[in-house]
Image (cartoon, rainbow, N blue to C red; front, side, top):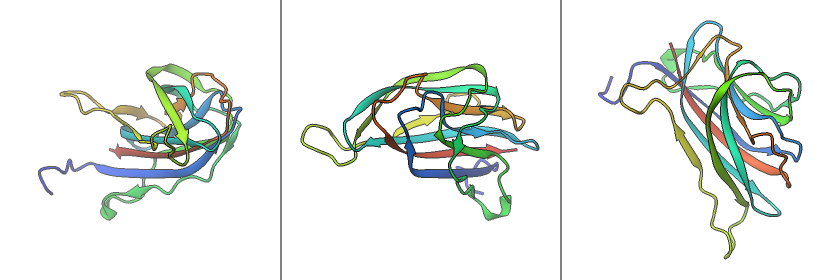
Length: 177
């Protein structure tokens, strides 16, 4: 084990080019916890593009103690163990292509403006750059901790309705103990 390795089982999952329609007013994507392990979300990488016109969203991450219900989920992303000796991950990545009913909100972790640019760069708009959110990297801080399969970190557009359909790519990185 190198000095940089933390020794915890680490996993990632990626959704590429998932469609978020114009009815996406609640959950877009998230990470649900595990019934058997403590899950710590360490990093979230988000990128959104639009084919017709750029938009700016009030993007929020919230912690929920009950998962959203209903809606339509995309095919579950493949969970990749960063070390093959760690075995299969037990946390569940989520991506909703049709809006679900909200789960039970514990609180909002962060809110930020997130811009979705045109899919092809023009002289007016720059190419899209991913938004990178790191958790637990402050001295003495924890990542976003999920205890139990019903807890989740969920991304929303803060109850706004997008004017145009958009394409989202998301990578989640977490540990399980």
